[in-house]
Length: 111
Image (cartoon, rainbow, N blue to C red; front, top):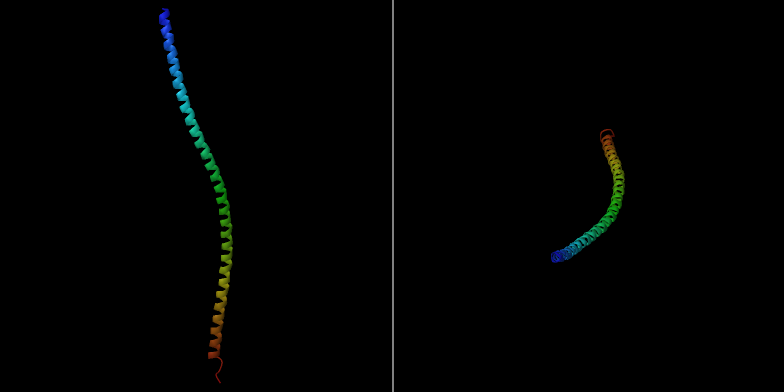
């Protein structure tokens, strides 16, 4: 019986050694994968930080563009009213010229 228990203890010791080796390998694989994931997460975090900075810059540029467009609209409105004034003046001048010419032709006697 002593011999049988000895063999069982040897078998259990070998099984324990094999299990420990396999668990160590599995643990090292898990650790390496976690390290890879951690590095990828770090890279993503830096990319997100860069994107946040880019979004801030773009936001500032969009605000500048809005301001410029507002200024352009204001100057366009002024230009349109200036053109309307000029056209109205030109029309009045033409009509006045036609009236004066017609007055001279029909109502002013020729010597």
